[in-house]
Image 1 (cartoon, rainbow, N blue to C red):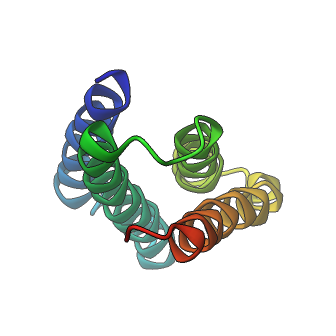
Image 2 (image 1 turned 180 degrees about the horizontal axis):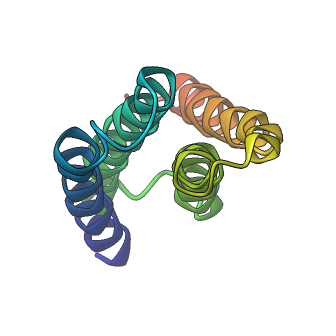
Length: 122
């Protein structure tokens, strides 16, 4: 249940940050930076909804490795978080963290695929 709660919180945060970017940042940052904010919001929401789906499914099936949601959440924080901070603080070097988050996200979804592929009952 804690992973389901975390997914719900991440979706809430994604909605709030998306709205903030659309309404408060439009006249404050460049169009390029606003696009970065939108990318961060998109990946946050996409992966949070995915986390919610697999967490609800796993609640009844209980076949996923315990560390998989942690890897997914870490990827969300590193990927989207670094992009949000890049825009908010205007520090381009924070973009160097973003690929680590992308690798964590890809790793988590790949791990899920391998886990489910190897499950005999699914």
